[in-house]
Amino acid sequence: MTQQVDVDGGVDEVEAYLRERGMTDGLPVVPPTPERVAAAVAASGLSADHVVSDVPPLNAPATVEKIAVNAVMAGCVPEAMPVLIAAIDAFCDPQMNAHGVQTTTNPVGPMLVVNGPIRHRLSFNFGAGCFGPGAHTNATVGRALRLALVNIGGAIPGEVDKAPLGWPGKATSLCVAENEEASPWPSYHTDMGFDADEDVVTVLAVNGMWPITDMHHEPDQVLHHVTNGLAISGPCGGHDAPNPFPTVLVMSPIIAEMVASLMPTKQELREYLFAEARVPLDFYPPYRRQPTRDVLEQLGVAIENDRVPIVPSPDYFVILVAGGAGGLQSAGLSCMLGMPTSRLIAAG
Image 1 (cartoon, rainbow, N blue to C red):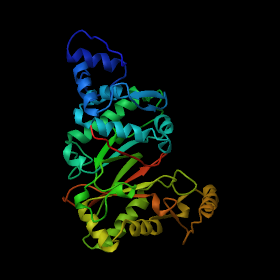
Image 2 (tube, rainbow, N blue to C red; image 1 turned 180 degrees about the vertical axis):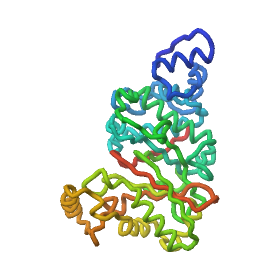
Image 3 (cartoon, rainbow, N blue to C red; image 1 turned 120 degrees about the vertical axis):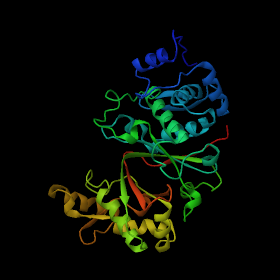
Image 4 (cartoon, rainbow, N blue to C red; image 1 turned 90 degrees about the vertical axis):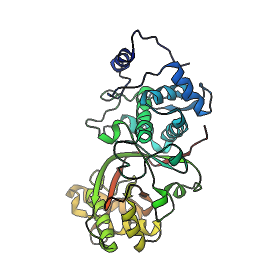
């Protein structure tokens, strides 16, 4: 059972008690009273002592009750519990390399992508400003995951989490839903092998995000700009070869429609990006150029005109459509240490 503590006083005293013990993210939290925690557990459809996974690096068991405590502290509505449970299970999948993500000096942290009808039921923001403030579900689910990784997994910044700088997207974990209705392509969770009507959460290990703003209105120029926007700001400098982890391209619906007029399928777009989103070999310092050639040769990837791809193969590009219709916006996100993992979201 989760330990219960009586704190004399009111909300301020509870807040101080948790903050002094490093159990918050620096922002005020909702007191996890027994009644609130019980409501969250009930909404999960699971028993309080059910273990979802062991969370590295402490490998402490993430019981439903412990997850519920962090969900309450983050301000989640009880109905969001199945999403959070699925996200924690996905994060602890071996291919995510959760121990590395939790303890590395790299600023990497989890990003959640939600697909399926649950986006509407829980009012996830997948439209205008979806990466920004104002969406309760996005903000609280992402925050609850971060609190659980600290309070259950033990990733205390400066102690176990060794990232010297971190980054804002790691502070409460990015959480975004895909704008499936506005996408010219099938949704991302179908890329991962799920049915379109299934509720799915995917976790990606992301360490940075940069905007790609286009002022052009011709599809070929937009595609060119998006491609070079990925290459110029992409994570190429940290390795002797292409980054061995995915690069994410998020396009607003307007950009996606223009790109899709030239690239009718995502696979065509991935192959185009692999061929064209490249950097000159002399981007690398001299002592790293031959190792880069050697690794690319092992991968069977040709260096055309001394240009190096930013990922090992077309399949390493994650293509998402999100956001509103307010402008010609895209964004790139770099991944590190872990591969995308997806889980079905169970009915509560």
